Image: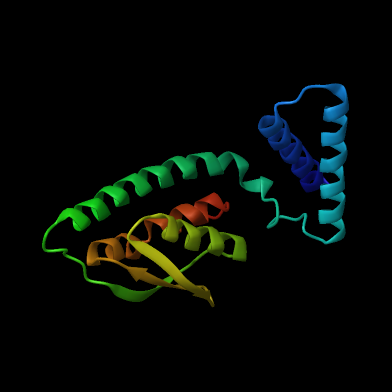
Length: 160
């Protein structure tokens, strides 16, 4: 029930932010449409810990700031590679361990890898992620396991 209420509040907040209407009739229509969406999502059994992960809330903001810094650093590295006349790339495919206990954690980890320029998650299977890296340096960044540890801590697991 908590997930449904949270989903409804997030939907209505997003609707209010994007529409900018504060007239009573339009607010009522917004509430009704958000309630309808929550009801439909609940009937489809989509309102759960994975569909609306409110349990990650407080820890997610710290992770987003860290991930944003990693994205900026990776962007600078990829830009340097692109402007270098020698184009020093060394593409590499490798498997990395995803130590998150849930599928949600593994998806967050795989998406975080893809968001950092120079690396792309190709496949997630059996607690492992197939990663394509543009350079050996970007591959080493994934292989250190720092992002894996941070995603595990985000899920509430012990930071390793």
